[in-house]
Image (tube, rainbow, N blue to C red):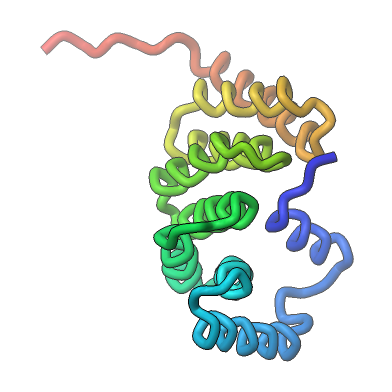
Length: 184
């Protein structure tokens, strides 16, 4: 089973019935510690990891611009660990998606899809599919969902992908073939 560091955390909290505000004090302390690590140990591996985790905290608090800035700052640096880079592309995609900037999110998910780090490609396909749907490109969304199912048929989101394929296919069939533009 593949796991993404971003999605399951939030989904697990929802499944446990926890509200978004639960654990606010602990997250605030964690945020302060991560900010200090980023500031005090700028050129270390600890700072790299702290930047990615800090981006996730900003995202979860709904501070999407801060998350985007944090991930961008991380991605601009050299000598990044591939796992952290994949996590940053995924987090950046989610932040852009949350802001409604689906075109920018697509670019992030494309980078994530192309990573060689295990377990991230399927999550990238889910992100790509969601964005293509929002951008009104159902055929590309179908391709992304199908790629997820082809590459990881037992993925935790496989059932959701199958349901989305059925929903989009039915919508396309109801709409019928595209109508030509009327003559001018």
